[in-house]
Length: 484
Image (tube, rainbow, N blue to C red; front, side, top):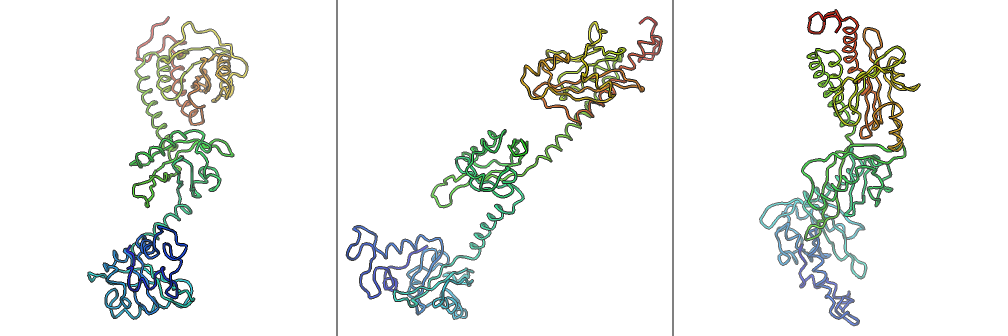
């Protein structure tokens, strides 16, 4: 953007002189002037040169009086070449169009407000450029029309600006994903409607608040990502963050697929960070569905491997414990097999109580378990179904006492007791136990445990049949000798 010339017509209309041609109140001139102040014409020239838009001005007769450097950049005509010309005819506009353009530009001189027009102007090299102009009238000291000023820019640049503004407005109003602008202190400064709903607050209520007040768990990962963007720039791909939000209905665990953009001021000579633009979508349902699919696929594979391995076991009880070993992977920490013996249950096999290990038959079994009334294993037998139990949210000591009372390993916090049924008979109960680092058993877990129990019950039933009828055919197809 170029300044107007400081001589000729520019001086005649410059701010250094009053309406009578006498010294006015311009800085650096006249009585009371500030020593060393910038003269008015130089200040005006500097202001015009610093504008981001092209600017020209006409006096009341249509003569060009001002022409800045942005106008020179767009059209190629310098201020020396432009100022003093009678309108645009023959140099900045084709002669055939000059009358209409001049009339439309000067029409605003006698009216209020400003007008917007689009014209095809000529470059110095002969090319044409479509510009959008905003023109308004200028009045002299006596209040009479004195001329017109016209600011213009290339249409495509104006359209790009309008698109950027429209995009910004759409993102913060109608976007189907969350948009949050975070300052360098990692506090929200702008929040769109979608993000406000996701964060559980109003758009204005969330502004300026630390993220730790909104996110119960996962705030360290979120703030770490924002800090990384401020220092190193945006990551090359979206990031999935699991967070727990504090809401009026309680804590909610969500997964947000997030993208980040470092914001820098376009007005600074060097990029100055203004903060981070954070865009996110809630993909919790999709992630949970994918996790469920992976879990079902893994468990199905484990059941298949257990069946193949159990088929190679000559001892049916070994086949039963092998099935449990495969079932424990990623599912539970301990497993117990209690078999029905009259009115009581007898421990037949168990995993080690103090360390991970395989499920093995209990040495010296046969002594009935003294389960208290209402024990989950006894309930499973009585109901002929599955029973879930948990120690609740008490202290570690209370959880240990809860497990000890039920004759389970001390680190047990969650239990799932599944009845063993075969040929219409209840054979016992298999109990799966989880420690505190796992979540409680849910209905899908019970379905899987029941599938495992079906295989265990079939092996236990075969074991008992061979024990009670020692002369029957064994699993190898040979007749078992009596007395074994």
